[in-house]
Image (cartoon, rainbow, N blue to C red; front, side):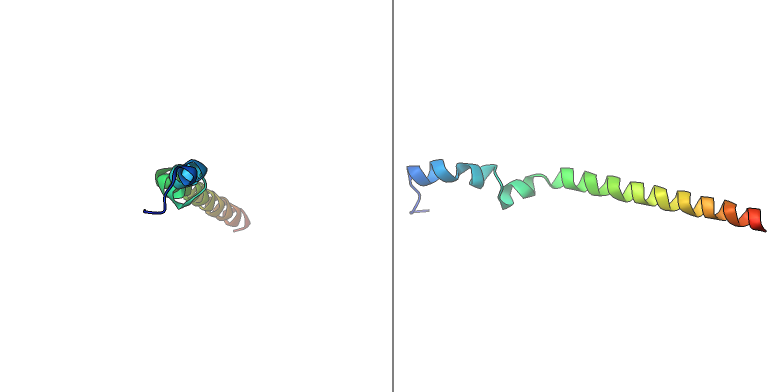
Length: 62
């Protein structure tokens, strides 16, 4: 940390602590987990609906 200066601090503060860097991506882990959970839930609900409708379609032809 010896090479830090006021100019560097002002210029890179956004990227170091809240901008588009790995630090900001790690801080959104809960948001990303919730989005993944919602996406998987919608996918599973669609699969169950599709299987149910397919089964009803097969009963009609029986």
